[in-house]
Image (cartoon, rainbow, N blue to C red; front, side, top):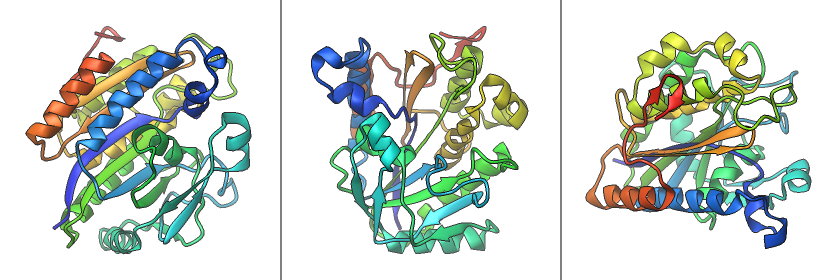
Length: 314
């Protein structure tokens, strides 16, 4: 059977590539620290030695819009074009062509249907920065096949947080049952508290530091009950108008499994967002634990859960 060797959940800031590849005199003052943290995080995936990546993200109104936006969708292609014109223009993100794994896509799609998840699918999917950003940060060679899974975190009515978690559990079951010798890593990106185009967009940090602190604790300790008791569409909107991307991080927690504690956690308070990087190892090896420890030493991150104290990360 296939082996799920790592689950990664992170934010996806589209300016990372431009901030860290511009000429030195044009880089923002936080670029060096940001790059150091991201490159350390990258090693947690490298240690998992994956053969294929299941990538969870969301379309930012590039290919889908208010008149046609699927709740959940899987790509089923041999290759995927990536990066839209506005992402090149505004963020400096280069174009990519990513190889697909159609066998796994087909198997996952059937697995979703068998588990009563009515997934949409596409043979013409072009992917945007929700998937390209983690490729840039944790697999910049873009040398592994991908299976993209898109979720609706933008268009009401959205699925519930519980449904996102259940989709994550289904992905884990499907990967574990796949008759293959391949090693699979699951990578998903979303948001903590985030404001886009609203009055809190350009603050010194994310719009709701208390939400961010609690979210990192809940995710890193595997406390799904706390999330499902405290996080609703309304509470996420109160934390910032784009905070619903947190549900993709909850989905990744579902893949990691009930009560699973993160093996690696790091974060960076970056202008108007708090960036977060988290890794779980479902079958942690000594080599993976050592990689997480080395990464944490370089980044200043943690090799285990991170707890909030009175709304402030301890």
